[in-house]
Image (cartoon, helix red, strand yellow):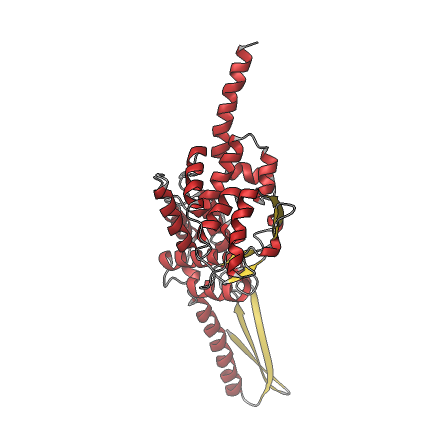
Length: 359
């Protein structure tokens, strides 16, 4: 509301309004020749304030999320991280399409978590909620909303932890035989599959390999970068610990040397460019079929799991495996491969029981 006073210098108007937090805000101006001029000024100010409030109330959750990602995230995050923001956007579009930020309550958000968590793992839902919480805090800082509707809510998720799919030692040998019998420098996908089996490297790390990364004398591969399909470019590896040097065997090195005839700095580059994941997985499924291995959901990253399973079966120390994989520490390796570790622990426990019984 506005109040008016007649001063020697003319009319003075004071406009008082409370903001979203209930705090009183006042705006004053003086020197108007008439009270009517002061009233007109007050009406303009009040209309502007109401207009700003109305505009903020009309902000859609999805629109604000897009603006937040474009302003604060897209310029600095890596392309593979942007995949997560796109995933969360799709969820917001599905559950909160055409919904204003101010209309979302804690109850509505919890209902979203309950429904969204069906069929999704705990780790996935943790990333979803972390992303949305960051967006909501930004909206509060921008005075779009007053309260954080994500507070005192709990993530919902399915106990759908899947056993890691891997190949047995016998299956690995059968696959290796098929792959090595189909090596052709014109089709580097077979060599990439071979590299994954022998090293446990990630697909992006394998794709980004250059000849300068391979030391044929020391029999090592230096992993210092990764290929990002989203950015279609080489980028730094997943994290600091992903920078590593691993030992490899002659069998792999001899096979890789065949690719020198292609004449590219990148080991697995073709005349058509970089091989994409769907192409490599298609070839992998073909090799599995030829090897008589029936695993319909098996994909390239499972080769990394198979590498770990094989090393565990050969009693390789978990610390050495963790370093080879490029994990930050052993706790990550233990968490990711808990199923495999438990399986081999059970086997070792049986050995312990047998040994004790022989005392």
